[in-house]
Length: 229
Image (cartoon, rainbow, N blue to C red; front, top):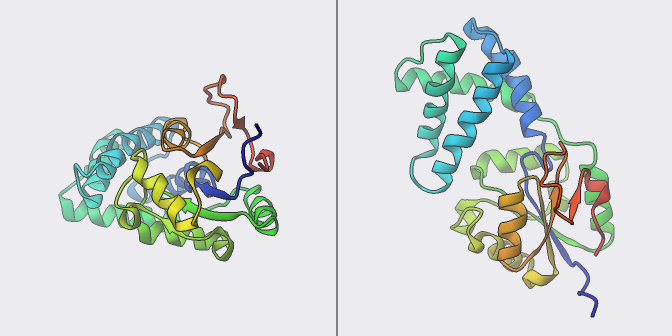
């Protein structure tokens, strides 16, 4: 028996719709020289490692959002030859980075045509992200497609973070659809594919950089390759 057609698509946001890694790299290139530091490859790599280490701790409720930002700076700034300073100084420094990050936001080229195609086909859409609501809604607004992408759901709205099944099921409920007719699309195989499937949704791995896993049968490199049903 053929599965029912997809009636809804739930997108991840960072590195799925918005080029977070590219935007952050460009932001570091603007911000670090202001501190007298060089945005060399080692420091940039350390930035993303610190983000991967501390951001999930906020998602899990272990630390506050501000604390994860401070911890990231305490990890990275010494590697860049910058004295971290006290919490007040860290907050000031991170505000400078944020201004550069927002000015660097870039949407992937395949987003607009894909969203318009899904909209024309009558497919309901939503964005499910673990980020802070205010910032993530601003990112979606920057795509120019907020009116078509549907609700932007963060832990503040869902009461849960990916990979908690409640996050995915809340997104389906907001679309008024059963999980089995909803497709989740994202760049993280663990959060956007495995966990989504465990919650009963279908899922596609958007592997833009070819990082794998290569044995994933529903793996695409561009949103233009998104299956229609």
